[in-house]
Image 1 (tube, one colour):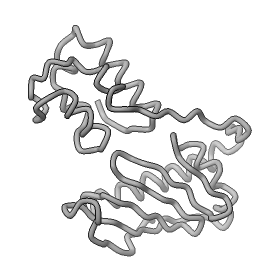
Image 2 (cartoon, helix red, strand yellow; image 1 turned 60 degrees about the vertical axis):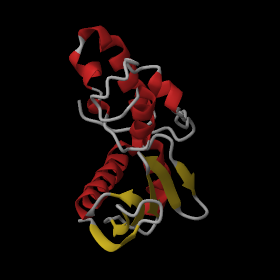
Image 3 (cartoon, helix red, strand yellow; image 1 turned 135 degrees about the vertical axis):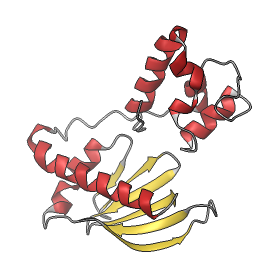
Image 4 (cartoon, one colour; image 1 turned 45 degrees about the vertical axis):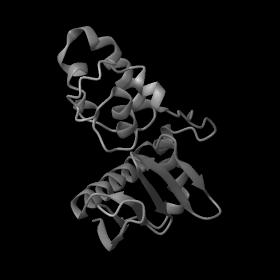
Length: 180
């Protein structure tokens, strides 16, 4: 079972925290790390140093070969535990799918820019999301400060179904997680 070892103030955002946690890993976890990294879109894996690092919204998360996990810009202890549990599930998935993962074919890295997101928004500047403009919403969405569902017209109006699906596909391919 995952556990939180330490909670510290976040340097980048005083309303958030940095967390050091620990997940349960098997003795051969170091050998499994490339498989875990392969399952995480846009992750960086450093075999020599024994870590996998990736972004989840504005958070930077690093998984170490000893099972320690560090996270920045976490909202609270509850969110930290959710992330630790997700990582444990991902590690278990890597063990289950190890034979299906071809490490010789690394995943394509997809970078999403503010303009990429903006191009899939209604561009109405309706303010229903709480932001003054759609471009401001795009920035906050990429930083993890907004959820894609906060764009009400995108999900309410049928005429935006095509761009909505495009945006969800783009965000999903880049490793963003969301519920719709």
